[in-house]
Length: 161
Image (tube, rainbow, N blue to C red; front, top):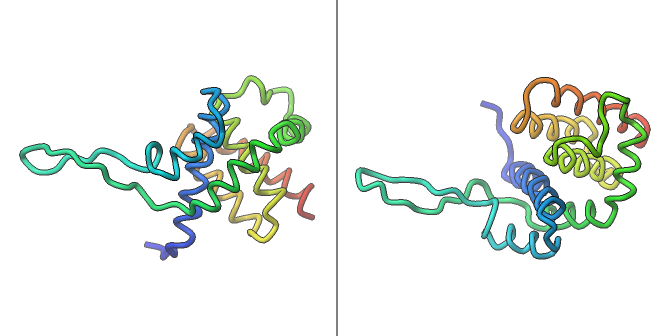
């Protein structure tokens, strides 16, 4: 098993939570600050119900701690730059993939990924792309993660070189 530091796991958790929060804010038509607070306070997205023992007692268990500052920065950044991020994404997509017709989670994932690629230049490009491809595999089958990998690679070459 590969060692992954607590700091990296928390940042990865922040990315997953950010994708979920961006999706919820947009498609649930909820105020972004309210969604952020719900995640940070653990009301949604950070806990699961776990059954224990023969009594089947239930308790809330934290999935994985997240870097809440990074999470908030990412969600707010996507929210405030959403229009330009969508425009940028559309310029890279071919006729087979239309951003507006994509699954909502796919849209949220791509918005977060492109925001990070264009606004967090201190994080290695390959690391960012791999993180979002891994997230894509959590939600989709083989075609979507491959498309995300190719698309993010194309965008990264354009904006980071």
